[in-house]
Image (cartoon, rainbow, N blue to C red; front, side, top):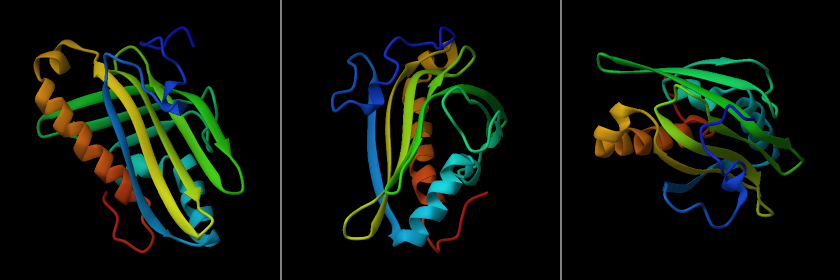
Length: 170
């Protein structure tokens, strides 16, 4: 994992995220029941949240697992971005499923993002995203507020992408 562009590998699993980064903690109830959980868990590990959020996604492994490479391509107006990541954690149990990926050289940001779907005791299926990031390239350093807006928009789109019975983006 020496290629990663940040030192705090695995920190998205911690209650306290590392200082010096922008932090994201968002979640959404995406449906209810075992069937919804199983569907969402499978789709999550197939990269569907990213695809439905509007990214072109290439995965080295399906389902995703620790060590998988993810390369997303995102177009924003006339600009195109290549977004390479490495999965640093992945797990699927009977009530939770998720993965975290970290940034590789060439990514516009540096940091880590964790995606997790949980089936609660009440039957709610909750999709959560936890991330920490800082500018990783010259254009994200000078375009800080714009980069944050793009990140906020993509987080919302990721969360909506696995919602049960809802129309999907892309």
